[in-house]
Length: 262
Image (tube, rainbow, N blue to C red):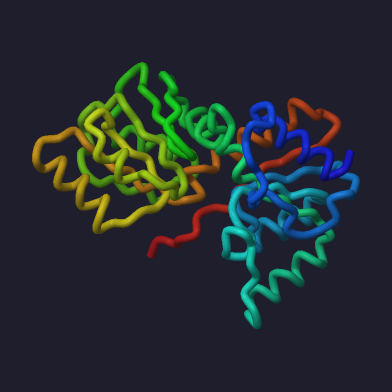
């Protein structure tokens, strides 16, 4: 099997009978030869230098990523930039294929990234599609924002922050994972108790949630960090590939968080 054949297959998981337009997708090859035969498939959120080195040492032929490798949504390379040049040289030495898998999983009828995050946290409830990368989950059993944050902390979210209410049981969660549009509208909606977001504006959404709670509204904004908020979806992808293609070796590589705590 080639990298192209595998990617074509997992793209079809999300294509909804060809109804979606992917003419301007970012889900393209970032480096390497897509016709290469593959035996080992690595999956991650972001192709950090550490992940590239780890995947190469493991012997990966294909590395599937969710976020950009070169600091721009469509991978427009920075000119005369020493960091970009050094990373390109590192990748050239690995001989791996790097392929992005971003638009397709978010376009799936049940957003694969959101579904993976919900599974990672062990949450049960009713799923509601909203729009691109924004979904809701009505919990079967209410949980407090503190309890929800603790679940992220147990699954790699080391810098979770909560604005607003902390200890009031909540039932309706808005899954605004990563940095999608419409997060403020979800936070303002009276039906929503908690909004999960990877990263967002502190002076806007954070202060809104803090004021709402102080004024007696059941409202919380949870800032998880971009990678921890979406990593569950890529973990799910690795599991699906392993199940569908047992002849391939697969492994998820955790890229960690971008920040250090001092």
